Length: 255
Length: 356
Image (tube, rainbow over all chains, first blue to last red; front, side, top):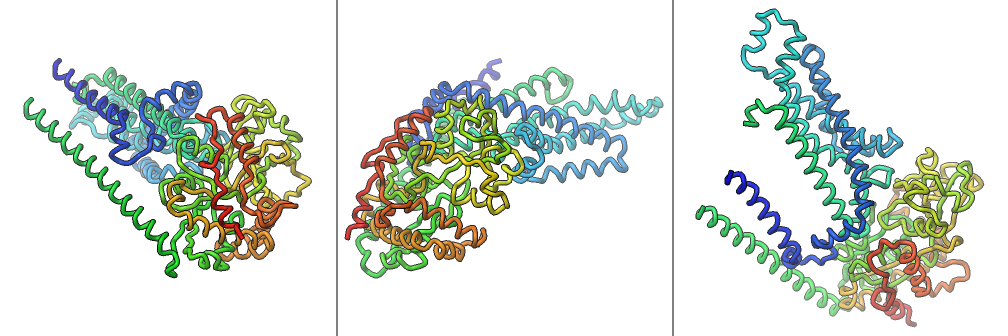
């Protein structure tokens, strides 16, 4: 138990120390910054408090786009992985194609998607979907195929049909990999949604808020958006961790 | 435990020395820089050219024809200046580049400059190039936007990032809520969104985007145009500004730069056609026709009808004050009231440069 407390206290202490150093202007002194170039934490907090309604609505717009894209991308990725597993002869090509998609940089993808969809929401979902597909497809494929030695042979010796092998063996075996992919994708989904907003026609969302305020030199507001983005990212990541703890208690990583 | 504490202490010491090291280093370099700068001012008559970096607000185009004409005709060289014109772009912010010393002098809009000044950036306007606003809201007649109040429920485009204040002022004047009554759209730099219908009313400069639409085959009769000057929400646009601290150390250089630039602008306004060609020779990213069109329109903003051509570049404090008042009135989000005085808008370099 004491070990656990220590694990929490140390990072927490460092975090607080960093904020105090920042607040007291040591960073500014060391690097020669002016307060309007790098606002201090208390300034960011008051700015965020004064503009909370706007920041919150922008955050919800970004998060909703990111989550829908995440769900869609993960679903497509998973289906591709299943097809590649069940029909390895031709299905594996799909996996390669999706991996190739993953190599397209988001900054190139966003302007392209903006030409396809007219609404800001559609643009965001499009970009996030493509970004999330690959990680899920690759991880799920590995989970579906890296079976325990002889487990599949055993089931086959019982004359179990493909369906049973899939649901009783492959799917449970795949669960940890799916959750790993989700953890990767949650972070990249928020990031992709924000970058898409940089190029989008819509004037709402965290991405637009950061870009617009930093361009206007309104740094405290820009940092408020950065704070919201970080907060949302952390909350979503913790959510996935929680799900992971509940669903795969049996897995080695959770013991 | 003891060992851990020891490592921790060591880390703290190391980080500390790192910071101190960086700190002292940066202050040293600035001192050196300052020394060379003042030395530069001293030896201006040695026949050696002094380098000046001019940061444009946008890509090389006739909007900035005065500087290109002055450079092409050697006016800067005559004043002992080796001019380096830095093109702008969507993520290049003149205010930040001038403040950080990437450029010495910058071109930006007064409304945007004021926003930076209120944040604490010590920037100072030294000349007002455009005497009028060139911003329009353009829509196709079919969208039915015959007056500003018809913008309600429509998709209104702007480039944002400091270019939106006039549009926001217009909306506020007609009691339109920018979040609820209409949809603000981030415009790209083509006018395709107007033709495609993604944007109903698009921001357009008289000298650029309006021309693009006309060149694309739309007739002026097909368009409804809302003019910020006529609506009484015009804010001042292209101006020249400097870092106040740098300017006080380089007074003479600023004056000489202004003298050469204003000479270039006077020439350009007298013969926009030639100025458009000069710019086209520097940058061929748009057609010669468009550069010449732009030059002619820009001349109308720099030296409007009935404007004394010898006064090109002068700062009309009344117009500046109005810009500041509108910013405060229509953009309550601004942290502080724009300061309009000698520290933020000064004519002393202009007066010195135009002295006979």
